[in-house]
Length: 163
Image 1 (cartoon, helix red, strand yellow):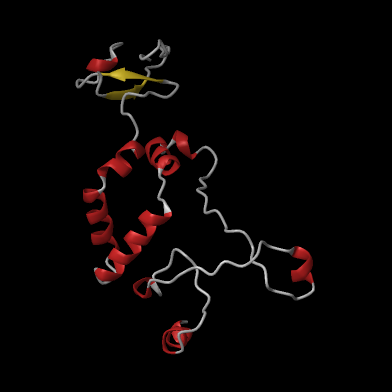
Image 2 (tube, rainbow, N blue to C red):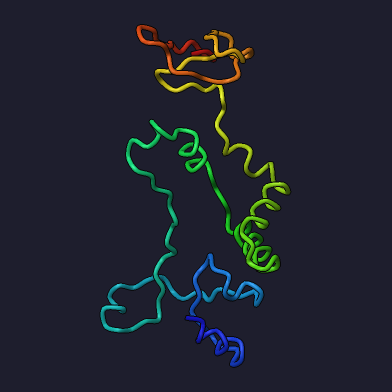
């Protein structure tokens, strides 16, 4: 609950906060760095050291890429740095906690950050081949607009830039 929030502000004291979170975003908090983690001290209830940062990772169900290859590709490529996250959280609070407006604004202002996260429509996975605008299979990547599942009895073969 937010009952502890006024204490940190009114008493200008140290308070526990995790990132990314918006609770103290407008206060421009600073990290306090303690000595490296010492399991032996903490086992003796001496808490003058801090644990390492926890890396936030991306996980998906095994095999999901066979039914959702594009979203999985985006998720694997997605990479927000701490500075990006701080700016996003600040803007989110400034916009009255409107996540859609915040995301839309960020996407419009930062295409160089996210365009590489999108899949190449003509990088076909196994079992799919290049197609043109009429869904006809072709071998020229420059003329392709996407990929389609190969018909029964046919297969795609990778040939340099073509499949």
